[in-house]
Length: 332
Ligand SMILES: Nc1ncnc2c1ncn2[C@@H]1O[C@H](COP(=O)(O)OP(=O)(O)OP(=O)(O)O)[C@@H](O)[C@H]1O
Ligand SMILES: [Mg+2]
Image (cartoon, rainbow, N blue to C red; front, side, top):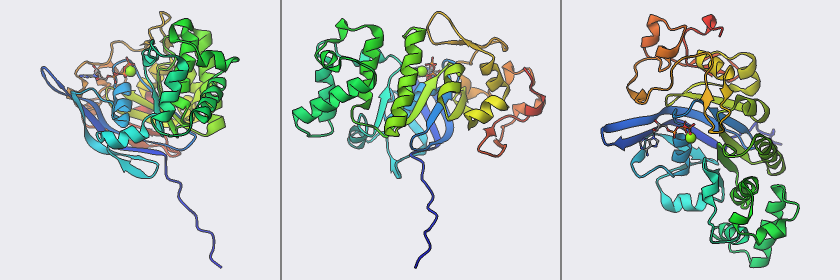
């Protein structure tokens, strides 16, 4: 009799050396530089960093939804065991809204004011599945219930303008979930909402992860949300991941000075989703792809001469990696 073999579990999403370049009036701009990460089935991975550092662009690249002036200029993406080409619209039409869903940074614009929530949910199902209307409607109503509506049938029959911001946000989440995707990319899904609703929606996403086992890539500025939601964290600065670790390791031993600054930061109270780095001056340079060496150098209180050279990854074990040569000095 054969011994049972140890099978390696493949990640659901494996992004290797992903680079994204935009054509601008004044030349090319590399918005994402050699990004590497994996997401396992059922895992919640948070992608954090200040405004303009490439979080949305990197997610849009995976979804094949870059603006027309942008291309994937390097790297590979594997989803569920196969290499995917996000520029292949035929393939991506099969995956998007079905196996991979995305909640956009401006989610409320996802809803069409001319159609009921039910119409829009049904259309999302029928784009991928030819189930009959009764079964499709049942699935829509169940999903509306999943996202917390006590009277899902009345929401099914409602037009978006008759619902509050929080209710519409739940409908957007229902649209992303109605086909039970394996991966949900949620780009600042609660930015436009007040704090209480934000917390409700985050709890909801976590419950749905537990119920359906879907993985979530959660893009956020809010380290409080990261601490309560994520299993793993990717810290991004100026187009590059500069630290990655389990949420426990990152919060107990943050290594990069930028990560520490993020932890000491507070989300702004005017609700625009931005973050003020209380302990570090300046902001992300607009042309960050031209910076040499560590891209955080000019803002870092611990910078050394050597930081002007290319910074290698340092592996701390337990999948905690950092791109900084002076981590021991850092105490912000
Ligand atoms: N279509 C585009 N053409 C040129 N540059 C772009 C384009 N889209 C984004 N960028 C640039 O890419 C960089 C990363 O932008 P991105 O939207 O990913 O930032 P972000 O981290 O999501 O910020 P925020 O937290 O504010 O949403 C920015 O410098 C932005 O100006
Ligand atoms: Mg963004």
